[in-house]
Length: 83
Image (spheres, rainbow, N blue to C red):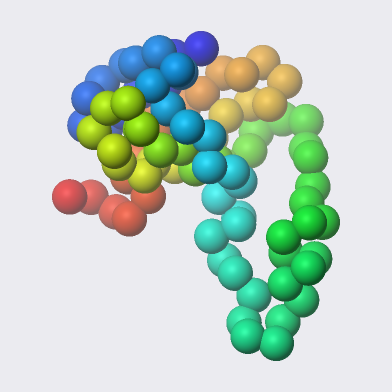
């Protein structure tokens, strides 16, 4: 599988570390249901917004959509917006 970093271009998946579903960025408020947020996750078949770290490259935190059935991935974007 190849992923496209907006800063480095197309790279092999081994340069990246999967961080998790992008929905996990929205942590619950203090006193909220932290256990449900941390452990009760959906495992959908199909498109999923994900976070990736370009750990063996530029070190950027990236987000993008990957189909969990075919592993087809859209180009990644910077998670914090444009630089």
